[in-house]
Image (cartoon, rainbow, N blue to C red; front, side):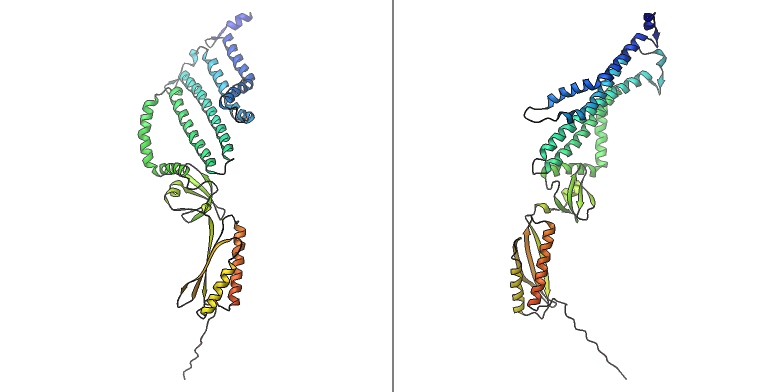
Length: 366
């Protein structure tokens, strides 16, 4: 009786075949975590090295779900593939056999799960390299790893799409690649600026005019580099705004990398009144030179730079250590400026325009 039920045909397949398929799928669903951990362990042995530490837990967290998904998809495809295709389902949808649609979907699902696994492996390798790069003082390699991680992700996704077209939809990719090359050339012309920005991103990473964390000035925008992408560079300005600059402009225009300067320069011009005598100006210059003899001032110069009909111009230039913080630098400038004001008062020199004479003509006519 029971054997007769198992041999009974249902949708062109015996009941026994359906039970085997369902049992195989249920078995894989139950033990998929065990198999996934075992396969993850094998992958870990392939990519790990004895002389380097390997974070097994983090690796498994990245690859377990893609492996489980891949196992389930492969099991379902193989299990249902062992059954005979029922004639009742032999119909067309938009001139395509329903069985061909199922085959296309199943093959595409396997390819997508495999591409997902490849991306997760890439993310783990990128994380390991990023941690290693953080141990160095050079921050350019940190962003370089992020850049190439995004770049290879795009490459893997493009390869995955081509595999889906070839093995999922059964289309030849030879003619497609030929067509894509022509279309790509047209797209490259249409999106020339985007291609130029992409090329500029490679120039930035290999020429290294700046790195993450550098304070730069480009096209009247001053800010700290926070991210270098495939198309643009993001800066956090001194006003705490977030500015995006195309990479082409970062390469082609004059860029001032203020983080690479060895000293910080300050220049002040004082316009002294024409009533100032030569002795007073010399006395003030000597006092100003004494004021600039401070611990964090590395070099200085005070001199009469110009004279004319309106004023005598005294230029005060000094350099400070780059290690000095912005707050301490501003405090030092304030101290020097206050002492210069006191020096002007001590030598009794007035700034130009400080004194004005107002003449009122009160002419009355009878």
